[in-house]
Length: 316
Length: 298
Image 1 (cartoon, chains in turn brown, blue):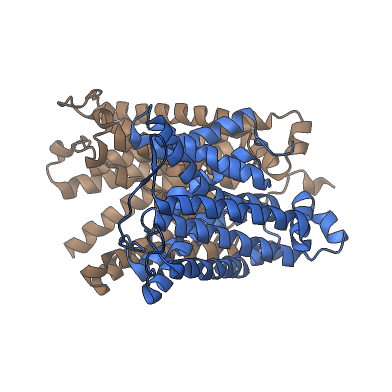
Image 2 (image 1 turned 180 degrees about the vertical axis):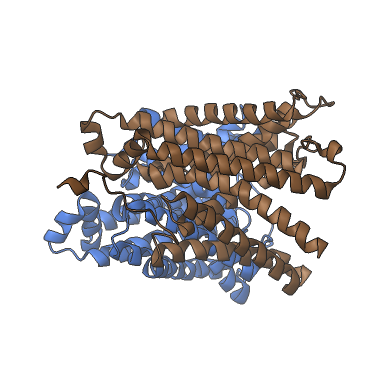
């Protein structure tokens, strides 16, 4: 019973962290129509920045700063925002599928950096010993996990609330206008490039935030936490939940992660250890199928985008 | 050292070119970036493995490490991979086209299809590597300071032959002309009485067959594994876009340039970053000349 409860705490913590990533993607894809295929790259930048900023100095590591948790979170967000801005400057003008190719390439390059720049990232062996907030004060891992779940509920709630606010603001309406009809939006004097870049940077910053939260929750990151499959899982979450609907996206996150976790348990229970690779393959095939089937049979997703009608429409 | 890197680059480039032709045709005729294309390379390699397992790679003929059986296996794999490409189109992309989905939905679906295709390979053949043959070969000194295996020379020669044949096909056959017409303008092609679905089908079959050849060539130099297509993906896109989307010559030149960039980069930077080179080249092209070397201005 305790085992199940502590597993659920862990499960929901991961769902909330990935929920932030999915919300960031929803801002980019659902509201602005930007195809970011390099999610995992921004997530990794956030995670590694947090690790470097908060970890105490250690032999062989050149940049560890040993600063408090909040600095790590802030540093991760600033670094990811800067990286996304740089990437955006080069790629945001491109047609949709070229943006997908470029962002995918960026994620691959970032993973190469985490693998090869050992004095900064620890290389293929990973980055251990990232301080977990209040871990020693709380005393037990179970207590820490419950505390951190609380932190995540608050942070994800804030992100959700903030996004809902800015998307209902004039800024959010311009995003949708550009997505629906760029020519018309530009004719009304809105700079499509500027708004796209802003949405791209804000969305990626959220991915960086999620990466930082992940690093400080687990206390260890390695290049193998940031493989492309994560990008596709996030995509599946957004598409299944309903792009353009933040609540739907959170629901999609819960559902897709539940499918992933449950299929993982089923595979370890049912597939002999000698066929572990095949079992893992089955799990990924499932994610691929969920993505394709959702696109074919329910392109709006579970909840879908709410129709927006001008409050002046009734005047006619 | 430099001459050897150039030779290796041309070899990698030939394999990339075969895959990039399909990517380029896809971008131009099917009008979306197909992220599942690289998986056809993997499938081609493994389908040939099936035949090689049954028939054996053959007794080594001349200086090569294989006999006619491997060539037959490659042809069969090319046909089957073409069929597979068409099947994936039937199952996924044609449905999306008919439902009027936007082009980016196709890109998404191609990501999903790629995941499924790649991992079905792991499911069937496991995650390890395979060799077609265990024959040892002695490198020949083709030019002063440049050594190549006979198999590698075979790959270069056959690639040249296939690309020339394809060029003649695209410029002279009715289907080839229809494909080029579709690339120029689907609406106009339809008005001229071209059967759009037939052109789409041939595009898939042709790019699948070329991808399969690239897969078999990767298997000859020297092995196949489930991630071989994935590792090639950025290079394929880089080559297609660098050369100019829709241009056959462009895809080949793009492939060679990307192959050279990958292999020459090792002389200057940490080999760990080798796989990022095609991507950096791609960013450079997109920033400076987005229509590519041989592309028309959009």
